[in-house]
Length: 164
Ligand code: CUA
Image (cartoon, rainbow, N blue to C red; front, side, top):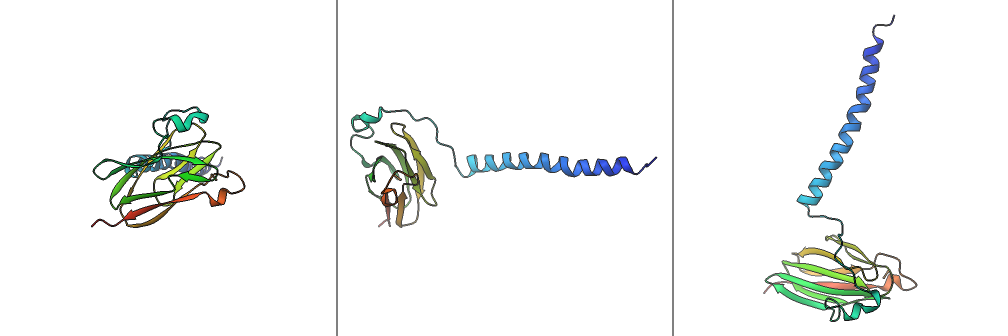
């Protein structure tokens, strides 16, 4: 009879069980921190437009930027081969920008590096993202879903102007 064996087995089991509990608990904590602390969320359903009628929809018939409240800007944007409308967005530093976007033709992407804007633009599916721009400068808007021969040229920019 090996009396030392059960406790060795027990320790080995514990060595596997504890990380297998710690991993999901750690991931859950990371999820909570990013969702509630960093404000990073998955894109939800914000409605649909018939893809062929995007240009008639109130949000997209006149793509552009408007100030909706002090320091709050709304961008109504469409993606189409191979451009964004508007291609250039100007806001003062410290602004929160609310992006409403969709695609008029095929799948595009809307990505602003180092900001909370990273969504797919599906034809007729309304996407929403919002980000704050505190530091003056130029920020690229990039299509990061392959959309054909000139995909790599599909880009725009956000110009964040210093407050006077
Ligand atoms: Cu549009 Cu890639």
